[in-house]
Length: 305
Image 1 (cartoon, rainbow, N blue to C red):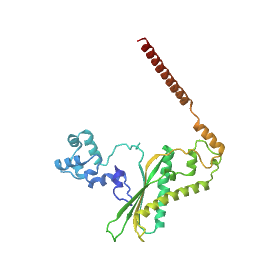
Image 2: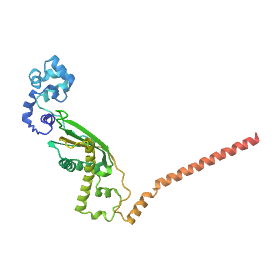
Image 3: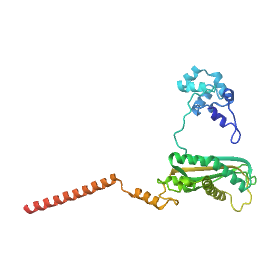
Image 4: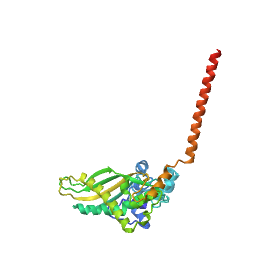
C-alpha cells in the first residue's frame, strides 16, 4: 500500500520516499477510495450512510465493531487497518510472464536527432536488452513487435503536449547476438569457443545498431521529413508479442564434419517411429488379407446358391 500511494504522488519524474512512520499521517487527508479494497460501492455506503469521505473521518467516526457490523468481518477489519496505515497482505510474486517490456525517459527538451539517439541507446542497453536476454535464457522467447511513442511539445499547434505512436513487426533474430545464435546449435563448433571479448562487444554493437535503425525508421514516420524542427519532451519504447524462436540448423562458423554429424543425428529415424511404421504397415496388410478372404467366401457362396 505504501509503495502504491508513494508512486502516484510525484510522477513521472520526481521521487518520493515513504517512511513507515509517515504513512499514517500521510493518508489522513486522502479520500477513502485511495485505500485498497475500498471501491465505488463501499465508498458510496460510507458517504450516504455515515457521511464519510476522507480517511481521517473514517478513523474518527467508525470503530472496528461498527465497521464489521456494516461490511462484514473481512472487509471491516481491512478498512480499519488500512485507514491506520496497516497492511498485512503478503507481497506475492507474479507468476505471469510480462507481455510487454517498456522503457520510458522524460526530458525538458530534445531538438536534435543525435541527442534523441543517445537517449534511445541508453534505454536500450541499460533497461531493455538485459531483460530480453534474461527472458531468452529462461524460456527461449524473443519479442517480434517494436512500438515507439514520443511526446511532443509544439506550442504552435496546441498548448498541450501531444503523443504520437508507431509500431512495426520485426524478426526476432535482430535481438540475437552471435554467441546466442551459436548456442542454439546442439553441436558446438570448433571455432565457437574461440570468441574474444572484442568479438562479443562488436556483436553487441551490431545488434544495438539494428534495433536503433528500426526505432529511427519509426521516428521518421512520426516526424514528417518536411519538418525541419521538433521539440520532444518524452520517449517510450515498447517491445512485445513474445514468442519462441526455432533453433537454427547450421551456423556459418561450423566445419563440414560438424555439419555432417549434426544432420546425421537430426535425420536419423528414432526406433520408436520405425516400430510404429512397421506396425501400421502390418495392420494394413492384415486388413487387405481379411478383405480378400471375405471376397473369396462370398464368391463360393454365390457358386453354390
